[in-house]
Image (cartoon, rainbow over all chains, first blue to last red; front, side):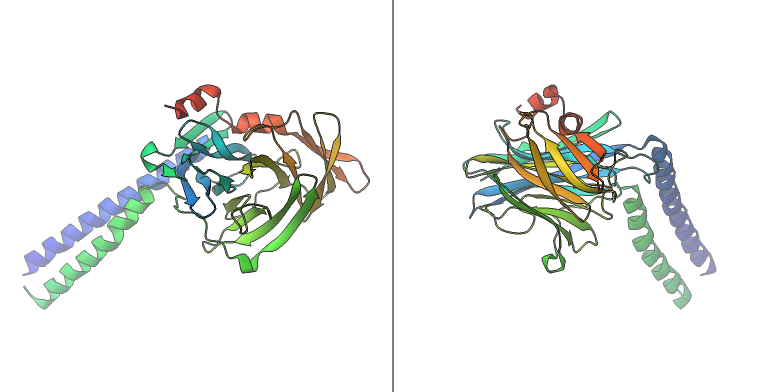
Length: 138
Length: 201
């Protein structure tokens, strides 16, 4: 019984070590990325309100590492139709990350709509377009 | 198996159930969240209110249930009523004026066939008023309060400015303290045409 208990403890220790290593690796990667200060655009999504025939787009911007010094980045969130026409847009420049951006509600009657999010940090850009399979009829 | 072995096994299961998901979460992209911010409008604070020839707009600071603060634009004539119907930006801490002393955000929506453009931003505490120099040389006085300026215009198209617009912040003695070129901000904030073209495919 003691041998079986020891084996169980060993398995537990191994699993703990793997979990610790994964966590440490993640922290190390994050620490390294602080030096790069990259910003990423993600989670493009939209909403449609069938009553008012309006919709809005949005998405999130995440920056790796803490902001120290000048962390100014430029960004845009768009909702557009399947022809590529922009129906709503929110653009600007910010200093604090991470953020969620939502365009205003805009008229979109009769259009299939989806979303786009873009960020430019010191010339390094990241964009994310909502899949066409997620488009919604407005 | 002894009772002790059972206890150890149970402890292992609990430990794995806790640590493996924790490690997986640590590997995931931090700061991710999905879904629109869920506002708590009863706790909103009015920051600025502008009335212009193109209509009116409110700027409010509104907490959401995730502990973030949202800067929300509200247009009274939008067919979709509600706070933030003109666009919003949410973060754990409010954005600050850039090194230039002020920043700018532009929001375009279509209301009743009109392309509405809202220009707003944060300014440093020394700035008490903001004026926008329009492409035709005219000056638009933005509503400025609580470190926020805002105005409402019409635009030729969504995502397009009516021309070169410079927003200048003035201190209490009337001296210019900061300025931003909105076209420069927009150019930096939008993808190149090739990337736009890709959207159509």
